[in-house]
Length: 81
Image (cartoon, rainbow, N blue to C red):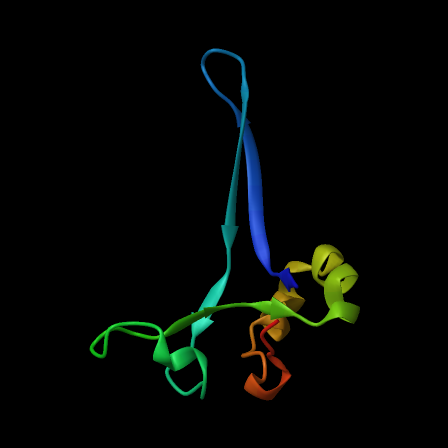
């Protein structure tokens, strides 16, 4: 499973490189599966799941095209193992 994320690296005062990563999330209030995972009064969120054939596209997308990836992953494509 590929998840959309952002990362950065910076040099701390002691000279070591610190890497940070965040998984991107979107609203899931209307998602039939992922809307079940937060307190009733809280906004429902889900990670941005990338289709297998879109990994390269995400990694090399220009900034102006990144919003097209921020879509709910279809519930019927999700399975448990």
